[in-house]
Length: 423
Image 1 (cartoon, helix red, strand yellow):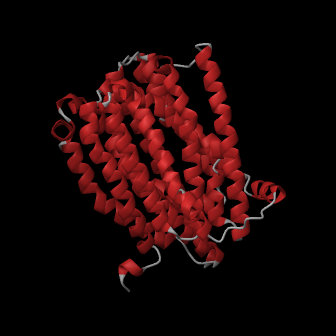
Image 2: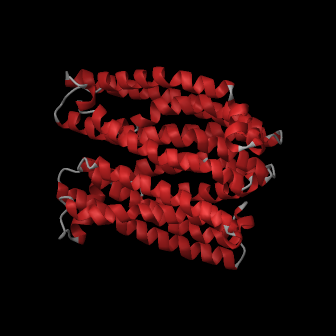
Image 3: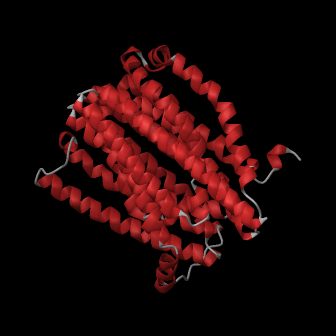
């Protein structure tokens, strides 16, 4: 069989080719952005974006995952409509809260130094939420090309607006957050223009939407809770440690670039792989077919292919950052050394998040998130006690890696049990 025609690899190749193009554009834009903006500018932006990643979870309560496994297209339409309405309501509520906090100067942590730039946060939350819901619908109907096109639009437009804003002195201070919001908004245009091509019911009632929300209540109860805890604990270096140690914005920016450079490619692959595996696992469940062998081959192949790349990056981290982004970014190398082992393990595990979703084991996934939060807090607290930001990041990465290894063992046990019962 031609490998590119297989059910698993062909859609994965489609998503990855487009996603790597989109993120490649973003990373290439950093060649200019790191010369237009300072590490301190990026530090402020990283703090700004850390709150967005947390609030996005609340805006849809992870209902965007439900359309893929809905029993019918009508049900998929109902739960999508519910998620879009929820996203709108939450985004408006966040806007009102931020306006009040700005007026009375009650912004938490380092957001105080950002001030009214925080008004961009609810708009980014809204556009990210709609993007996720639309992407899930197109994923259900295997319209992977449209997903790729939207991702590319987000990257191209976001990079363009950031560069232009950075070159214009009046907009320089808000260039990074404003460009991000405008790029995300542009990515919605393609989905809205093509949504009519999908087999989506137009006459879904509110009762049907509420019924679908009740049916998939495990997503807000366990998946959203788990992702909220994960997102909160992942952003603790920005929202807690940076304030507790009084880390300069430039150091936050150096860590942020190392995190962006490693996390973005890993996240691109995991997002694409998870979408494809989610559909494949769902169909195997419906047809009572085994899953474990497919997943094992996938993880082993990814691990063997990517390990040499991560090893080279580890060895040549400092000259790489100096050459690619400029000498002022060489200080990102210690953070990259701390992050690379964690990111490699993340590459092997996060694309398998569809396993507990499909097997309705969200409770266990949430338990791992709580353990990760606890271990991360301990590691970061040690760094704070020593007033050492780099040590805090190193212990943070070690704690994250340990939990991921345990999570991978749990996935193996779940799949083994399912395959044994199926056979």
